[in-house]
Structure formats: C-alpha cells, structure tokens
Image 1: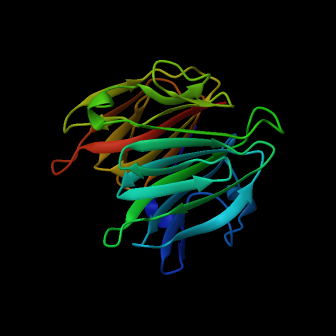
Image 2: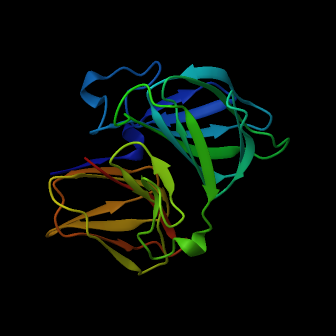
Length: 239
C-alpha cells in the first residue's frame, strides 16, 4: 500500500518568525486520522527567520531527529550541550525521562530551514542524551547510507527505536533501489529536486514537500528526474 501526500496537503503554521509545514497532527493542527505513521509522530518542515527561534521548552519520552537543510541552527539544552549546526548536520535528542532545549537561528541575515521528526522510543524513562554529526552530501550521493540507526555504527547516530534514516542525494537520471524488507513501513519525504518513485509496476512523480507513506514495500526504487537540481530526500525504514 502506498499513499502520496502532496506538499499542499500539509498543514501550514505561519507565526511570522517561524513558518512550519506539518505532515502530521501537531500543535494547533489536530486530525485524528493523520496522527502518526507507525512510530513516526511528527515531521515538521520549519523555516526560522534571522535572530529568531524556539524558546527553551521540555520534552519527555521522544526520540527527536533534526536535519538542517540550509542555514545554521543553534541547539542548547539543560545537559550542557550547545552547538551551531550547519547545513547537512543531523542531531538526535533522546528526551527520555525529561530534557529541556531550545533551537534558534544565530544568523543576523540568513533564515534556517530544518526538518524535525519525532519518534516514539523503544521504552519509556530512558536516560536523556544528545548527539550530532555533519554528513556532507558527497557521503550520501547515490547511496543508501544510514545517518541514524539502532545502536549507531560506522559513523551513524544512535536512536532508541528500530528505525533507520537515510538522506540520499541523486543527480539527474541517477537511480537507487530501496531494498527494505517486507512487513515494514517506508516513509519518503522530498527536500529538493524531483523523482519518480517506482513501487512494483506503479510510478509516482514526487516534488519538494511531497511525501510517500508505504506499507509492506516490494520492489521499491527511485529515479531523479529533475534537470535543474539534484534530488534530495529523507527516507525512513520503520516498523
């Protein structure tokens, strides 16, 4: 089963300093029929204006993954972590028993765009933790190399859930097979460029902001079709 959710179908939240597109129910957007996809609870596409940000606030029992698409994002938390994350950076925050953090844009001139995803953890009341890494596009071009996976290995970041996350980049005409197992879910979210998603004999054209939610995937592959820029997307393998 595959469901395509177009960019226009997302919920828009525009508070001036922060513009967000919500893929699932979040904040003032409440739709019980669109509450989650497996253990994926949120996928928010955020743009924060220069010098603005989210004030310190608490979380618990969430695995929060953030990918910086462009600009610089400043992270601070009550574990003592403070870091400016540039484009291509991924951070994982295990809220566990409780953590307080803020995300802001330190630039005086440039906005920052980042994707934030929330996952249910494998169990409650874990010890809070945070980590990050920069993944240059050259490490991801034409490859399914995990940036997030259980345990974390080979340079990937650790998540407390049976989830693997990839952010491949494909040049025009480049193809990529997606060999995920059956009885799993696959979530694909487009960041840039255009692709054709092939699921068996079906073809689904996708553009920036579009997403595909796939159950029990078989014979999945993608091909970059845009002529102006490379295709970049978030690909999540989850239970």
